[in-house]
Length: 224
Image (tube, rainbow, N blue to C red; front, side, top):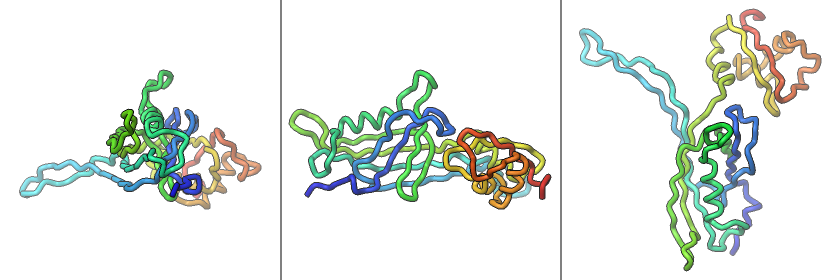
């Protein structure tokens, strides 16, 4: 039996040139078979400070580290799965996502998604184990373990960190598909704050945001 992978929703890796994920950099890479395992990791760091009169040091929060995911994939070229590319060709395309770009002087940024899984970051490591070969030595089956580390654009990180700083003005560059209420929720934690946003930016049509448009984000305390 030959599986028709066109009928399946497949894990997709989209390469971008910029950490805002606005400049696509070529054709997306799609898995032949969906992940056999996906591991998510989040880590905070703490610093131990000796405390006088106590045998246990005090733990002070040192900051959060980028989220990380590991994805286990299987590539099969034995004919069980229909494919126009060999296992070797698909691995070459996958490994190309880690290559140095001459214009940006760094590898690609990668948007990985599949079902509810949605992750934006960089591909920090690819481990490949070849499982089967043909008589000419070409790989027929391989297992790949991908490690991605989260990347957050500076403006988004600033918006997240400044939610509790009502005295600071910010700006926001609109992305494809974003709405004013979703921006209000991400910045202020309140989708109803879209109205002050519309007023400050003098938006005649609040629903007509354009990708690349820059919005002024007022201090929440100034309007509420």
